[in-house]
Length: 299
Image 1: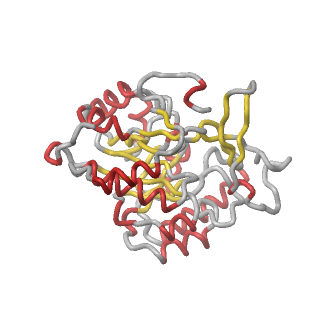
Image 2: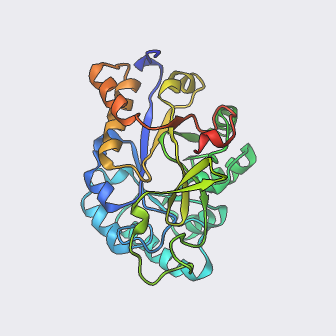
């Protein structure tokens, strides 16, 4: 593997986690940004994206509050907006610096009513082009994720033309679909949640292709891994990377971050190699950055 020189860049490493359990075991010092909360599920018992009490609990355990970015619910309906307002009020009261949004409409609303909150656009914001990115930049955003389907060329050109920090997912399963309805319940918003989505379920299509099912979202069965392509990403001027810790055990998140930090710092010793080997004993893929498509990326 090519060695990366520390003199060539100033890399940023972030992570997305969804539960208070993950948060409590996270080595916060390894990350520049921590995206926090499950934007898909309003009934999760320990989800700060929908529960102000859980959000306050998380903030009380923060070592680096300036790193926290709250994930806002994806595609909220009208009857969910009051609850989202309570979450935003709590974020402001707790001094959380930023939020990650899934739509331009929500970004505009937050910019108008909560101007102190920094806005990040996420992969469900459908930012595919420079024009899309410029809309968020006009709202004061300076960083975010393009749609997962965006290729490396789009990431490079949009970053250079817009001046935005484009965050690149580098490890972990990524969400590929979202439903308004929980897969485990007949209704949209069950009265009680048994947290069944904390278990692994696999959906098979035509007897061959598989995806990983979690509540109202579907995730790639293969894990994205860009470890071997970090020199290429850096050569394109891309410097901001994120671990997709949606459903990863926190111990694996910490090991992944530690290995990445060593690699980005120009060192890749035996200890880093051992940790990388332990977390890479799964089926891996390169996501969509290299214009590859097909079911081999999700099964």
